[in-house]
Length: 341
Ligand code: TXA
Ligand code: MG
Image 1 (cartoon, protein in one colour):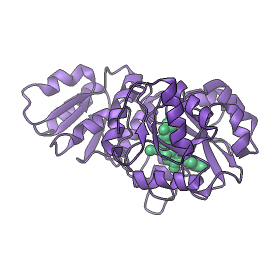
Image 2: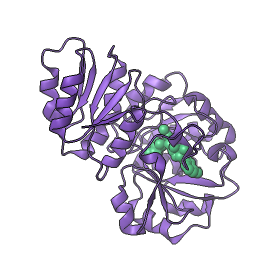
Image 3: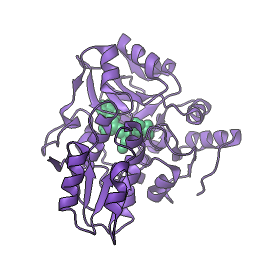
């Protein structure tokens, strides 16, 4: 397998991989996806096999525009078009009632389906050329951090898929926001690049699913089945330290041993790195730059796996805007092991 820059011929070849039931690494603005023909149950099952993904965790369908919604969904509320009109193409997945032609393999037997139009021209062109929706979860092996570059996806998927289209690093860096429009009030199932505040501007009241902020107890069922799994986790255990940056830095300095890893804001990187032997320090970018935290988080977690660190400490960004998504992913990586200072 190889990765390379994209031409028209590549789009045609990629569409051919999809149309013939193959597995294709697709770029999107959020994370790279592991795509297959969303109307071909056998191809969809191959996605689960390549990822080692539990069968009860449904996939989302990627489409080139909101005009395709009617092909696969019914009882579409006006709010769906208000949201897609404002945020598509972009990092927003809407959960709608599905039509019977959507295979059970995609929805894990649910009567709803997640729909998303990625802000990535080449991927939309491939979907149009294949004339079928692409079912795609994030392109990581199940449980690992999502890939924000073709190289990261290759780490997990080399030898398991037919090709990856390399369109450079992802601009958003965390997976799409998921909003369930089949319930009232609409429910945020997963925070992402479209923020809760932005959704509230259009929808008014938005419920936030419990699974966003806390660990699910055994047997509990969040509405997005994927939210119950331990996820994004590096091999070493992670502790998230919440509070003002000065305080969280002081807490980590006091508790961390030399060979522990640290995920910190740029302002503290040098101080943490000083006199270091064996430890690893990775920066999320400046305290105030939330978009940068989102872009860097998964790479920071992956970077730890290339090392022998036995434990990881992370300074927790604040919850506003896309910070809600960053804190959610970081908390999940830590199994919600969070210290407040
Ligand atoms: O940004 C993204 O959404 C990326 C890129 C590739 O588009 N995709 C992605 O897919 O993150 P995945 O499969 O890693 O996460 C999809 C999440 C899972 O937690 C799944 O349980 C939930 O969406 N989901 C899918 N269909 C659903 C449905 N019908 N109802 C509730 N949750 C659903
Ligand atoms: Mg995923």
